[in-house]
View 1 (cartoon, helix red, strand yellow):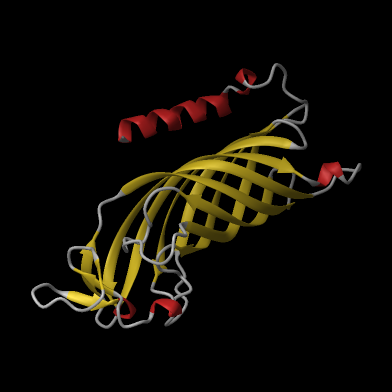
View 2 (cartoon, one colour):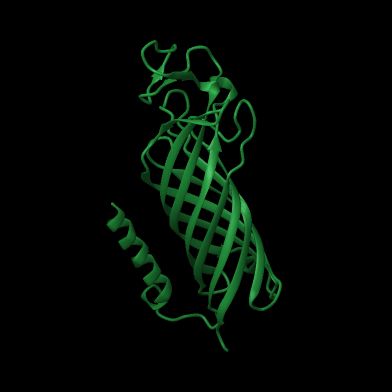
Length: 245
């Protein structure tokens, strides 16, 4: 699986570095760029970052490289890593929600096996993903004059790795460690940026990623079927080349 995902990543990078495979001719305003980003992911699965006891914020950091072929359209490749923290929602704080050491859901505590009620547990999920995003700058569609601002709508597809570890909240001791799982994700992000200089821009982003497969939090599916990551943060972009230079 790892060899297959590395091959996909290499193919996506080749598309970015060789845009003529996608377009017969580059626009004079095309530019190649790189950047870094960092954010706060909030995840929703069987459990949620907006838990019944409190809200738990995660962290994310990543790099990206892309080519803005025209004023409106571009393609971007991203690598990101981070961590999301989740606990059971308020609606799950009922007497018959117990998790056994074997990872299964039970309606009561188990005599011959360690088990905890859901409201005594939390999940910390290590995240890693790489993905391809298609950037559409909306401002040129409504403004005829050049602007330092850009408003990007960016649908994309990602390959997502998640590794959940379930802890006891009271003493932060490890209860269950799940193996890493790879899944496909579909995402859409809104990104607003301002060009501080011709080569450097600062921006804010927010977006949702819907992840396939089992719950990323490591809890068994019982009530909730969500598998979503909401990530918001800052981006710093440096333009390496502009058409016409």
